[in-house]
Length: 102
Image (cartoon, rainbow, N blue to C red; front, side, top):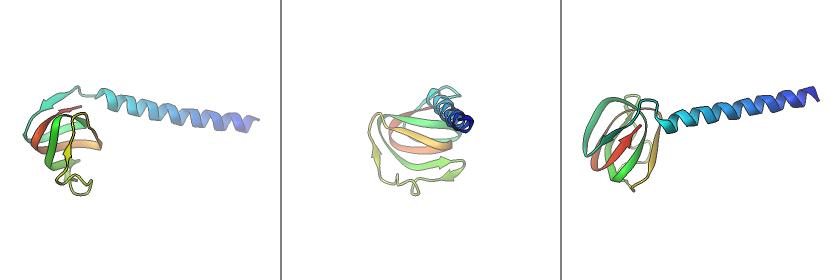
């Protein structure tokens, strides 16, 4: 019986950590900023939310352009699309549309 309780407590602790992590991502630890078309560099954002249908020609995560690796080449993201970086989004080039970065 003691082992079951320990297992349950461990599992609950893992869930609480996941909730805490996702809450800080959703809230945006550094506030937010609006970006229209153009190049954005030397930033640290956790996620983007598309405001007007957006297409990227570059998308940097931790200084590496991951546009092709993430299947984003030539894709137009519709309004409302949530784009988490997974790590820090450090820059991007918007060829059309606009985003709010968190």
